[in-house]
Amino acid sequence: MRLIKLTVLAASMGVAGMAAAADNFAGVTWGESTSNYDSSKRLQQQMPGAKMDDVIKNSGTWGVRAGRDNGHDRVYLTYEQVSDDYHSTVKLRQENLLGSYDRTFSVTDSARLYAGVTGGMTKVSQESKGYSRDTGYGYAIGAQVGGLLALTQAVELEAGFRYLKHNADVDFKERGVGRTGNAELSSSKQSFLGVNVKF
Image (tube, rainbow, N blue to C red; front, side, top):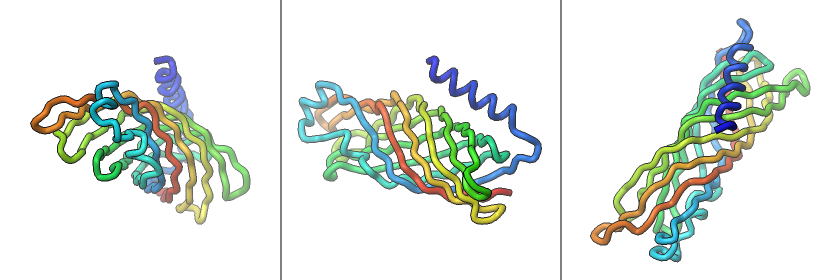
């Protein structure tokens, strides 16, 4: 709870400090995500061969974002999603809606580094064959670091890494059998590349 309050406070300070000369920007990201799940004992017993941590592992992830950047601070919203399966047995989809604040640091006239905090909501969907679909919601909170390289006054490239904590869980209910158990998303990490356009 304290970490959530600190994230909200940092984002609020970032918004308050945005200068009138700040640029709006929009962008797209593509990267790889790995998500860690805590499986219930019942699920481990009923599905001993299913490794939940291997479902979303270095899986392709895309996102879109929009926000404001004054050259020293960035505040932005991001929607991203990743979906993958484990040996065609277990399939999971993860969607994040995130609000982020970054503090940026100039390295050269065209390059900046950044570090920041993120908070938001995560939706996890269980879409495995032979099981009833299920959806769970929870929080997402964490931090990110990265770099920005301006190609022109309006276009910049971005590379970053983000780590998030979660608590969304989903049930596994085998059709014709009943509840098998549940799995809770505990954390995720992502490395990504992006392109931002200022306007």
